[in-house]
Image (cartoon, rainbow, N blue to C red; front, top):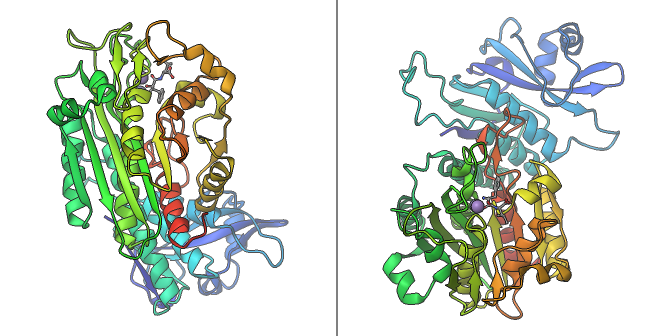
Length: 506
Ligand code: BES
Ligand code: MN
Ligand code: ZN
């Protein structure tokens, strides 16, 4: 794991593999961003011109490497684009700092140590840069055998030290500690998403959650198949019925003695979604190890809340199952008796996420939390609607939906509010059971949200995050987002818990 520290050292004397500086897009070419004054001076104040000559513009995502000036201990200067130069009296936004730091850390894979001389105005900026660096440094190479030895293997950047902050200032220390805890847990969520489904079945996921929870003083309870049968969790059991690896429901309980609010996070944890008997065609199942990204996000957020000691009680529910076709699998046409007592006619076994979530939502509701947020790679329809970098937010409370949207924006996650139009409920009417697990094709993401709403306890504030788009990056890396698992929604959940802890949320 990459280490993160603050340093008051001056850039020239610093022992590191590289010094990272920021470059912004000015009206007349690239401009060296604040924080890199000492570096610029060593180039006789001409670093901006030099970068321009090398073709740099300051655009976001841009990387220019050049030899460090004479007298510098570090051999290389890495200039990262920050995008547009801020207006007078304004500063670089947190997300642009986070992205630039991520790009730099990614570029420096294999290096031992880098010093970041990016613009820092306050502790929040240091936190954003630290977070971007730790998230950008992420690499998943647990399954790469070739080139694993130290000589060939690159591995993530080893150490990041931020220049220009105040290492002894409490706010800066807290910002670095927060960035470290959140990034490490988010990266763990990415690891879980990236782990192949032959190694991460429901039992294995539950074991990982159990170990981490115990390490961080979180109470943990795992319901195995027997316990699920005893409890009547027909949704989770129905989805897991086709797999050799039985389903699990994991409950994580983090409590703080001074807490006055209680949040419940519920995650979809389909460790592999083949579609079941309604089998997905080739081309649609290669990335379906990512279908537990919601549960991974919930897990990461609960552990991060515990590490940060937030003054709020948080319960995490991981609804874990593998959706497989077999002689014991649920068939299209079967009726499941859910944990809530409602019956569901399964018309399409590929609409399995809502079935496991329904049971977990009902279980979460029994504790009467102040609010429930579920997170799920739920529908392809949400990807069609919002693309692959934005998740949809649905809720039974407009103010809560807006609060989540704001929290997402604050931490640099792209999200958008979606409606739950009542008329779409009609499509889920079943001649046989209380409700069917499918409805109209148009607005499929909203139909899924309406289905979930039926399993939220009376009077409980609830929101649903459909992260099917941003959870798994099939394209190339960008900013601090790697290829594969992204850790989508982790930072929003942590922010929600922080805001709830300080009473800024209802
Ligand atoms: N896990 C999928 C949704 C998904 C698709 C996530 C692509 C990430 C990328 C979900 O279980 C699913 O199969 N949904 C169906 C629902 C339909 C059968 C009503 C879908 O969206 O097609
Ligand atoms: Mn499915
Ligand atoms: Zn699924």
